[in-house]
Amino acid sequence: MSMFKQFKSAIAGLFVLLALNASAQIGGSGWTSQTVNFNVQWPYNLSESSRYTLTNGVYHMWVFSNDAPFEEGSSTLPRTEQRFNPDYTSGEIQYQSMMMANPNENSYCIFQIHTGDAQEDQYGSTAFMLFWFSSDGGSVHDYSGTELAKNLGSSWFQVNVDHNLVTHTINVWINKNLVWTQQDNGATDFYLKDGVYEQSHGPTLRMDTYVKDIQEWTSSGVQNLSGTYEIENEASGKVLNNGGSTTNGSAVSQWTEGSSVNLQWTFIATSGGYYQINSVKSGKDAVVQGASTANGAGIVQWSFGSSGDDQWLPQSNSDGSYTFVNLHSGKVLEDPGSNGSNGTQMDQNSSNGGSNQKWTLISQ
Image 1: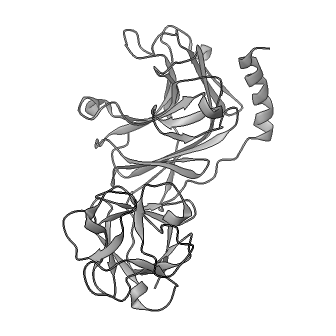
Image 2: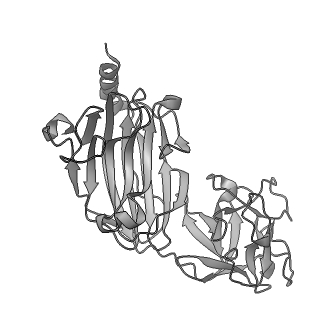
Image 3: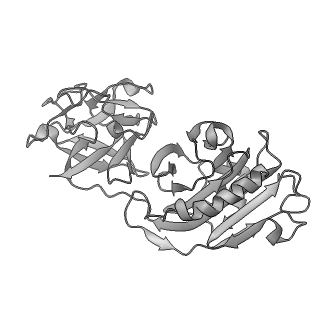
């Protein structure tokens, strides 16, 4: 039996054994469910049904590397994709679906955020693409670069992609784990696509993607963090502490939750969805020491300035917590792994989805 026939045979059982019901969208608030609407693109010289089917709620899209492009005269590689409508130009949108691909097939895009046609020449064709490779048991990557998840072949996996045009931030979850965060390309007009789009990194002759349970939501994209909070680290259970100091340069540490104003913080909105994290005790902000962009740089308090190291973007996580991304460095606020010790100074690091980088807001 051919490898592809074995894969098709496995799918019949997987529909029963591994079919996961898509859950609600991840993170944020104020979401409105949208009607899913798309056009299908496939090799122009073939019938749609020869490369695209819908069976029992499962969209099956495939191409061969020797297929024609989707438009006559186009120089692009073969594709069979769903192009979602309409374009979005403001607020925040989140896409969710269940996907499956063959671990023996290689080098194709299964999802992309595409720049609107009128802005493509200025900003580039895409802001994000999720590539499928046969390596590591079937894996997905940021383009052909960073591996985001592995051992996905022949099994359903959940994809969530959130694009916030207020903050120009893109977040990607695989099976509800945050695996990628980036800024978009700066455009203001985008649309989404999923399916199969061949890439030039050793593509196999045949490439397949299966998609089901597609959902979309939109929101204003604006976080409203008014009020006073204790900011509790998910890993340590301790809260941010300014140590009772009122001077610039004092360390921002962690401490056992209590009633002291040393442990209380307010969020002051700046622009683009960013906030100052301002100490009630001192009136100073949590900043990255020396405006460093390095992993491990300590967090101190300082008077608000213009360098951007004192502004943080709150990103919602699926468990109701937040990850705070620094405007200047692009790193996130974290407990450096102190096993919950009081007095440990906080630092910044690259986002990895760890519980030591997640924070719960406790209203005061």
